[in-house]
Length: 287
Image (tube, rainbow, N blue to C red; front, side, top):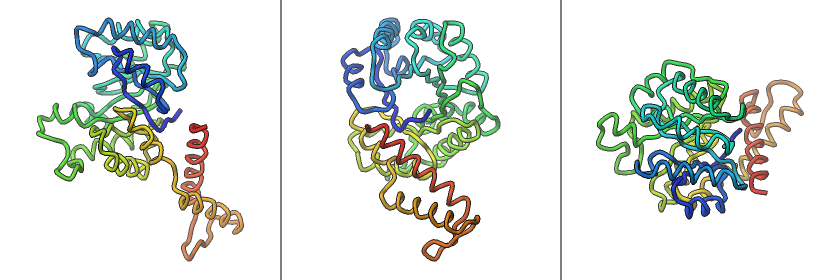
């Protein structure tokens, strides 16, 4: 399971839920956490249950409240019958937290196929454990990260410089999320780009995420979705290169070949096949 775009939607807003369902997002994240005031949690759960009971053209995840809040079980109990694609676990601090949420999903009748996307970098403790441990779990389908909560937990004044580039600890959080996801065999998903009016900045950041190996990116506004999709679509030159690599190695009949004055071998072949899979996947999701 891999999606290019995951669009956050406040779970207590029928208007925004309807708007999100009409978007081109590959997946929605119905947010019961930060986007919902404490006094409105119960109403938001009811709204999510109603929304899940209706068909939608994309996959749907539910972001529950953190385990430490004491609200997570009520979130799962109210929504499991709607069979969301999965749950997003914020402020996850290790594999034991993933197991705890998995237990709640099973307890309240969730399907075996219901997955978990963990956000593992929203605290220093979570980030440090991401460095040291394998986070694999049978229900884990994706790992993602966020710089805002980590910034607050660190007591940092900001996470980006004046040019919009992440400072070192936040780059480390991004890179560790990518590596941990690849180790666990799940989708690595890049963080949101918070300035939803800055399409150029979103484009640059998403293209970098794609180049590093991320397979998707979270969005906070429907207008960001088309930009993310275009950024994850391989360029025509990449597609031509990938086809040429495969043809050259097949013609050579061995593990090494020459292409335009450059020696190519198995790592280039693997990259070529990945580019063509991305191209085919993007075409399929667009149709």
